Length: 82
Image 1 (cartoon, rainbow, N blue to C red):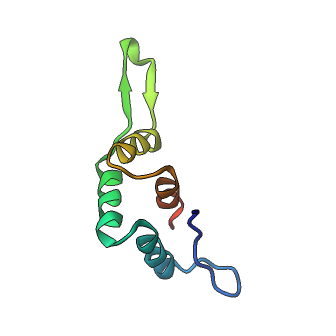
Image 2: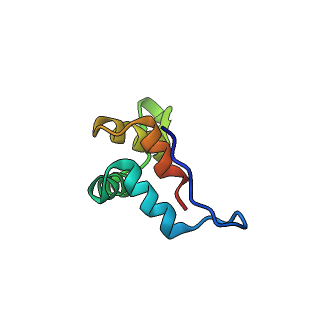
């Protein structure tokens, strides 16, 4: 199942309704809050000798969210929210 943003007749994204639809997609406001908290607590990471390896915030967020039980579709839905 894929998440889609809610748009009005003119095609503009309705932020409030999109966020409500996102909460419903995840199964409730608690899961929506938790994924937001994961995003806020995530930073990019540089590791390895001479800093050769770099992970973006999105990469680190995806890894952390997957470990917390979120699916790829749920993570993608969070990342497209306005």
